[in-house]
Length: 278
Image (cartoon, rainbow, N blue to C red; front, side, top):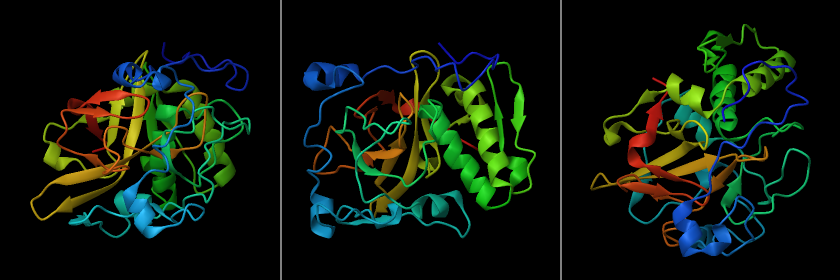
């Protein structure tokens, strides 16, 4: 189910499970049958990373994640969402932690962990992580009037701030308590032409079950073939992390844009589920 629209107390009411495990992976790899899988080799068995970093030295920013041969990152305009996403710092520790400080049981899904707080409440789950990244970018650009999210009743949550970070964090907690994957899906614009997909766009399936992931980088080769990186939070609330590609160890953590179905470690999307902020 979607989140309770009456926010009695976001601190005392845990959010409902609005996600489902990847059914295909549950068949192919029984270890993926639940949200709490055991570790496997996907997170560390990556040829691109092996060529450019050691096992104990994680890449410093998203922009540092190595590319497959023949690919170049798509152009990013100055002060764009793409540029901001690429410059997010990555933690040296690849462990994904929950909001309560405990490590997530499934440590197989992530390639790298974003150096962004998850908070200490079970609020920042999948769609919430997407909204946080978008809001943090707009906050950094001082575009406070653009920080707007809507709940399932189309009630508008505007930041109404002038740069106070404490108020900003309180505002986000309010948004996380009221808005979710379904409301965010309704707020975003469907992308009909895959060639228009760009960093910052969202893969989303609203409702219960549902999930949301954000494209944090994209690259292209001379033939126009595009690849992209995906980041997510999950449930319980946890560190935002860039996921591996469980269907292609050689390409991981990059994904092919022209795939009919996007199989991620913990969810599956048809390619028609890309949406934009525009």
